[in-house]
Length: 343
Image 1 (cartoon, rainbow, N blue to C red):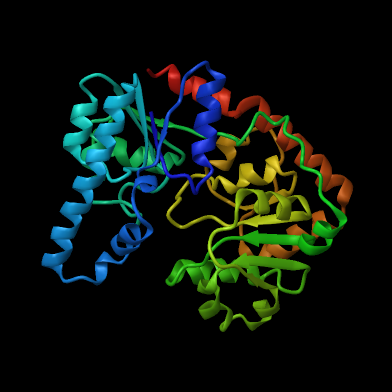
Image 2 (image 1 turned 180 degrees about the horizontal axis):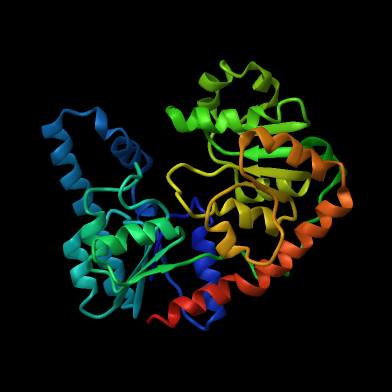
C-alpha cells in the first residue's frame, strides 16, 4: 500500500520499482476522496483564529485517517510505504502495525519543511524503516536516537526509455537552449532561485513558472522576457516535451535539501537534457565515478553552461553516460529491491 500524492513523480518510481520486484501495489491518495473546496479550505487554514483552526484540524485529520484505515482494511497489505506523513495520526499507524510493516519515505526535511505537520517525528518513531534522500537528514535523525534511517535515491526508469517523438511544431514552440520549470517562493528561497537564473539572462533561456516569479523579477528585470507564465502545474507529458526540445537544465538546490539531490536531476537524465547542478554533498555519493556538470559558485554558472552549449558532442556524450549509469545503478527496480531487503 503506497500512501502518496500523485502530483510528484515519486509515486511512479515506487509503483514501477515494486512491480519490477514482483509486488502488487495499491496507490492510495487521500486527496482523491476529498472535494477541491475541502482541500482548498485546509490549505488556507492558517488565516483562521487559533480556536477555529484547531477544531478544523481535528475534523480534517479525523476524516482523512478514517479513509486511510478503510482502504487499509480493504486491501490488507504486508507493507505500507508513506510519503512524508500524508496526514496520518500516530494512532492510525499503531493500527497499521498490527498486521503490516510501516516504511516512510521523506520527501521533505522532517524538522523544517512547511509541508510537514506536528506529528512528523511521532510518526517516524513508529516506523519499521525510514528512507531519506538526504544524508544530512539521516544524520539529524540518528542524532536523536533513530537507528533505522536509510539513504534512498532512484532514477525515474531503467534508462531504456527513449525520448518521445517530437514534431517540428513542438520543437518550434518549446525549443530553447536552457529551460527551467517550477514555481517560485514568496520568501528568501525565491530570491535565491531568481538570482541563480539571472546569471543566464543573456542566453537563450525560458522559465516556465507561476505568478510567484513576478515579485522577484522586478528585482531582476533582465529575466522579464524569459518568463513563460503558466496557471497551475504542468502535466508530466508537457514537461517531457519541453525538456526533450531543449539542451540544458540548470538545477538549483532547494535550501531545505541540505546534502541531497533534487529529483529533477534524474528527470533531466531520463529526458536527455543535460542537468547542470548546484553542488550538494550527496552528488559525490550518487554520481560516484561518472561526470556530471556541477556549479560550486553562482558566479561560475554562466561559463559552465556556455561550455556545454558550445560543444554539442561533449554535452551529448555526458548525458548518454549519465543515462546509462542511472539505469544501471538507480533504476526503480534496483532501488526498491534494496528497500525490500529491509523488510
